[in-house]
Length: 305
Image (tube, rainbow, N blue to C red; front, side, top):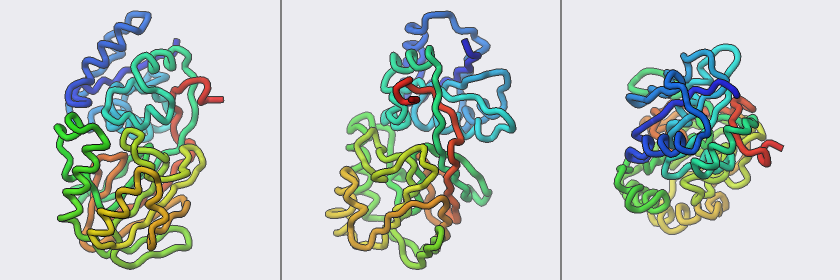
């Protein structure tokens, strides 16, 4: 059996991380060495551990998509050979788990026992955070501009679920957000106007599988699916654009550009929020680029073949 390091986020999904870990240990058929278990103590801790811990073939992230993203970013920070990633999901949306066929603790146990891995692309994000340049990696998407997450509160997901919380925070944010002037460069294209938001998608579905944010996106094709949404009236945003994201029809709205590219650079006045996989990450200026086949993730054999 490969040497596995378990990074456990007990605070995931409002404190369900610890319960998920106990469920995994109850199902796992062998004792787990305490030296192979590290409990995170703060935001960013999983990334620090994954970047520094040596002697492991697999790093298992016990938590939600945010924990998985931290572990992936930590592995990408390493020099030389990089461990494979395993997911033991307990997040609300579990979007990364959906992409690799792992929907439950039982799925995670089965996948980890077999140990088959597949290469996936990542989105690298370079942006500013409190005046300091930083970088990180996302599996699902990067987004610049409009962000419903600035309105998100933990109780919303618990009470309304991922889709309900998304719609509520989106509705609230629409009334306070003003599209800034952006300069966007990507391949041979340039946009220089007021832009509502830019999405660089790696996965097709997000928000617990309820939002088809980047139609046709494939997590191992070496491309970003980029959506550029121009400044629109609040009425059009509420009645046409956002209601169509669930089906993916938003990309056919007048003025919306949708195409594939490998890198996109965004400057804005004033600076606006940069998101990665649904979490706030920094502010513009920002660069988002695809990293083809950058990470190996344990998944079911049917997804490996």
